[in-house]
Image 1 (tube, rainbow, N blue to C red):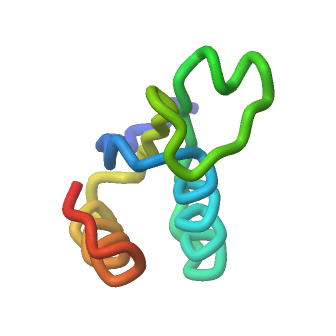
Image 2 (cartoon, rainbow, N blue to C red):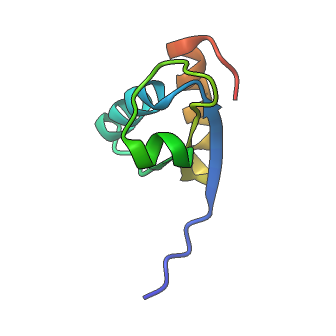
Length: 80
């Protein structure tokens, strides 16, 4: 079976903690997502809100993209 979902990138977000916060809300709303963070932070397991170069992006199904953008704006006042 082939998954026909088209995924769209949201971000970069300012740190993996922000991305994980968004992920928790997406889980509550039953919106599928996957999180990708820069290699350095991911490899070393570093967690920070705004360390230099620490970024993360979230991929969501295209049909949820606008909803997720609005959610991030409400949470952090950032537009992605």
